[in-house]
Amino acid sequence: MDSWLRFSAQSQAKERLVRAAQYACTLLGYTLQKGGAAAELRRTVSQLEAHMSLTRKLLRLGNSVEALEAAKRAIHLSDSVLRLCLTVSHLNRAMYFACDNVLWAGKTGLISKLDQQKWSQRSFRYYLFALILNLTRDVYELRLLMECEARYRATKAPPSPYPSTTLPNNSPTAALPVMSVRLRKQLHLFVTVLFSNPPLLLDLLKNSCDIFIPLDRLGIYPTGTGFVGACGLASSVLSILTMVHPWLKLKP
Amino acid sequence: MDTVVKFTSQTQGKVHVFRATQFACALSTHVLKSNPDRRDLVAKLQDVEANMNAGRKLFRLGNTINSIEAANRSMQLSDRVLCLCLTAANVSRALYSLCDNVLWASSVGLIRDINKECWSLQSSRYYLLSLIMNLTRDFYVVLQLIMQRARDKHFRQKMSQHVSESPEVAEVVIPQLDALLFLLFESLKSHPSVALDTLKNICDLFGPLNKLGIYQTNAGVVACCGLISSMVGILTFAKPNLNINT
Image 1 (cartoon, rainbow over the protein chains, first blue to last red):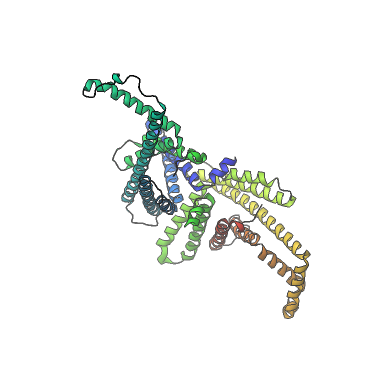
Image 2 (spheres, chains in turn yellow, cyan):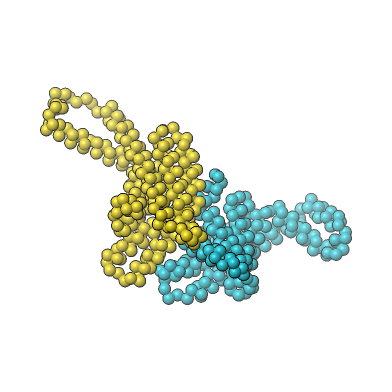
């Protein structure tokens, strides 16, 4: 009960719950459509989804300021790659929220002659760019950790007792098993690093799920309503998880 | 900037802002309604008001749990009157939230075949009861402050000085009443949190009273009172020292 009170006191937490409900409705709508359910039920689910979407737009009205504040904080990071990725990502998020606010004003009738399609596309473009930068940051962090882990293993592991058994590089057929071993080692390293860093794993999963939404909406990589709904729901659940357990949130 | 970020990051902060916006739209609609040239603007304001209302209803979905938890906490209070008032107020608020959730589910089509008017009136009844209990608590706290002040020697000297300073006023006004009003004013001045909470609850009272037909005013008065109440809510949320404790 106490954790629920703490959780629901944050506006972002409630926004995430509404987002999860919205994508659950998207997924449910797709399932009902495939299953040939009654048109009235499908209409109710669609109406509920639209209501959730509009409410989320309302809840995000002040978020541009927060994104700009986050960008201002990210400028002071010592790592140049992180600084670039996070600052530009936050600026894109601020632009995405600004477009979202314009869309909200259009949907509520404050701006009557608004090309909603154009503004929606613009909004998703900024969202996509923000996600690409977040994924770049995740990959960069992952590479750093993998290098660190590889160095640690190299210092721990004893040198090979059979130096003569190393295969010559000039033979392409002989190089294949070496490549396979190296690839397997890299893969093992990748899995080890990810599982020993749950915040990075969750952030990577979350951004990977999220990226399909703008890709589908912009028509770059159409996947369909069901897949978008599933990805959105998975991403929202992961996001809620990082809020319930703050240690799972990737910092900075 | 930092204050804005901190304020909007909390659920209640945003809810207060939405509530203020909703009542500001309602008030503007009431003022501009008679002007035929502003029909377009009135329609826009009504749309925004409806949107804010729907958003707030969705945002309040988990509030029943919060109210029950608050009732649980207030049950442990040592003061009998405070314990009774606050527990009853929180239970009423929980029931009001529950009715509100049913109304929201009905508005989005999740629940059909319910008497919306009946549920709306029931919701207003619980809200009114909650406000009455909160006001009872406020008056009880004010009474305690007055009694505390009346026992204070320094304050009694200050009060007699005030009455003797203005004999022409004392002739017109009953001295006891003047002393009581002075006592009340000074008590509230030294405890702004109590004054603000009382003002907020009095303003909120007009909404359900009008809806239930107990004391009918008009949409303008209700909106104006709602706006004042929301502003007080924002103020007490932004400055926690102005929020009444317990």
